Length: 247
Image (tube, rainbow, N blue to C red; front, top):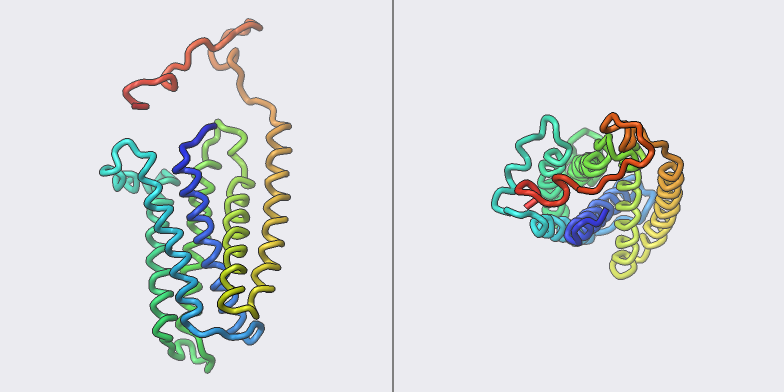
């Protein structure tokens, strides 16, 4: 597989943005229950803006590998059956929730929503919604590939898990760098989880490669065309070789 560079960059940038937001949300949640030192709302607002910037950059790059970018909106119309359509719907949802989360933290909005008598309930609520949407986006992105049954290398739960772990590891790594400048007390927390997530990603990616190396092909050229001769060769690429569809 030789994907367009725009696909590689958009996947990487969006994953970093998702992971950074999850890192910010997790540390803010811990600070509300006094497990980590509390930070001003501006810290989470600026960090959220950085995460949103990565998501916007990924969205912009997604147009570079389209033949007709002006028709991109049509890709969302197949949401009932297509994981790609669901991903296209989930991404703006994530971006919207992060934007609201940024605003709430910047303005330091708060209210006792649940009668808990503790601060930060507005940010916690918006962060929970954003985190759930981020996990949904990870699922949709991974399933774009894992749902392709005839590509056995992709058709595995490990594909979705790898997207989540690699994106989260990238985001927590960036969060550690951000905290080193803005909130040194949180650097160890982010860096520790970045290491854990990176090692977990290494393990699951290695498991995926081992699985792929041991795959037994469901079909062969002979079974595909119903000819049992031992020397069947594919000499033409058919529609993959170029047609009005691919152009």
